[in-house]
Structures are given as structure tokens and as C-alpha cells.
Length: 273
Ligand SMILES: [Mn+2]
Image 1 (spheres, rainbow, N blue to C red):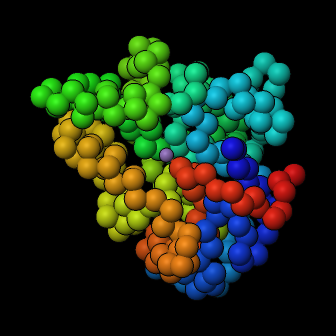
Image 2 (cartoon, rainbow, N blue to C red; image 1 turned 180 degrees about the horizontal axis):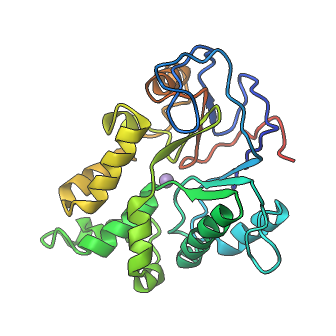
């Protein structure tokens, strides 16, 4: 499933799908692309350009290419043709599907091409991307318990051995610096519907710095803890979902959460154009 979001999506409350609504009009705004977080927003800052969000590609390179072409973000020769549009891939590029490395390569290339064309094509880190990095860095750690090793956990979660074989230094470097969360107009984009982010930083900048640093500290216990915490998800649905979404937005800023990670059955009321 590849949810897509455009600026035409209204700010109506109760929009279902993987969009969690804080339903607040006086939230503290975040810093990236918005006002100072110390200023109060009385209305959502609009998206400045057509904006597309794709979650959880999971190695499905052919499907990724198809929907990017359908959206006119890439041309027939797979080059960025989205002009000043904004594209966000919100994590989990790899695992489960066959072509994770091709997905990474395309994301890296589109990032350069879109920036050169006055647009943007950026990526957030997902737990499967971290799992792949963990298998790369730590492999069979801890050696005493083979079934608990990073490689074993990664394979049980759909890790594709071909991806690990093909993973290169530049790809590792790129994956190791991706942010975990971003503001995008009134939206707060993140991979997982989990409160774990609130424990890794008070602000979006803090959180991104902390999770980036974690990927550069070769401490397998810290990696293990972070990956385990992705097991806590679906926190924005159910009886306590709206309250948690409000708390999440109050901490990080933004008017609505857009996430991937957890499949949802409900589709947005407004079909993307
Ligand atoms: Mn995920």
C-alpha cells in the first residue's frame, strides 16, 4: 500500500487512514519549514508545493517506479521530472520485497536530481532500514545465541540476503544519516505510529540528532533497544489514540501526523489526484 498525500487533501478532522489528527488549532509549531516552535499557530501553514508521501516501499522497486511515473515525478527514463514538487519516502525501503537496493539507489539519485531541479525528494529512516544496517554492522552478535543475532532477527523480519550482499559504503552512509521525523507544512511525518520517538528527543531536531548518533555509535545494545521499541505501535488508534496523537503533536509540533509502518484498512476519504 502506498498512501500518497497532496496539498489538495483537506484539513478536515477525522480523515481516516494513516493520518492521525490532533484536532488542535493552537499547537506549538515545529522548526523545519514552519515558524518558531515558541510561536503559536492559529491555522495550519499550507504546503508550498505539491507534496507526495510514500510509506513502506519494502523492496518493491517496480511498484515504486510505477507510482512515481503515474504522479509525473519521474520521466520514462526514471529521472526526476517533478520540478518543484516535494517527495517524502517515510521509511522501510528494504526487506520483504525483492529489490531493496534498487529502491535505495533510486531514492539517493532522486534526492540529488530533485534538489538540482528546485524540488525535493527525501527519505525518513524506518525500522527495517535500521535492521539492515544492524545486520551489516553487527551480523551474528550476540554470538552465544544465534537465534537472537541481528542477522537472524533481520531475516525473520523479511530481510533479503541479496540486499546485504549488495549494500555499499555510500548506501550505508546515506542510511546512517537519514532523519527520523520531519515537518512538512502542517503535517508531522514519521515512520512509525509509536511513542518511542518521544523518548529519543524533546524536539524534532533533538530526536533526529539522537537517532543519527545512535547509528554512528557501535553499541549493539542501544540498537537492539531502539529496534525493540518499534514493536510498540498502533498508538494513534483505539480509545486512547486521539489523546496520544495530541500529546505527540504538542511535543513535536504540527497539526496532523502522517506515518507508515502499520497497515491500516481505512482509506482516506479524499482520493489523491
Ligand atoms: Mn516499519
